[in-house]
Image (cartoon, rainbow, N blue to C red; front, side):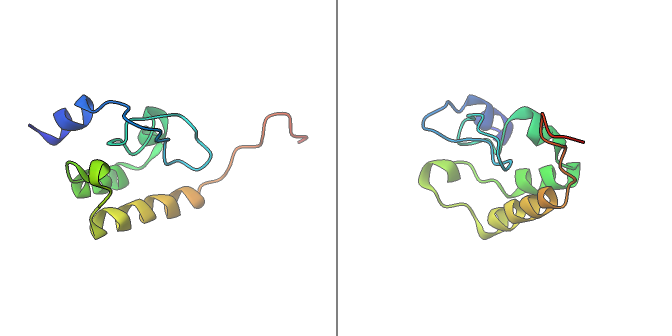
Length: 91
């Protein structure tokens, strides 16, 4: 089974939310995040997450060191992005 087929076939087996800070959308544990936030990442970071993801890591809770480093790079990139003003905030 290809990696893409594996990820697409995984169900919502437990509570697992998108890894974008503040996003509470539930996604299957095999997925990094919800579609809008996944697509908001630069292709290079998506490729890095995808390349380092190992089938079953979400089941046994043992992501590789490379995956953890990729996930940290994603979080660092997100932290550097300008934040939109909160709804209702005075301009």
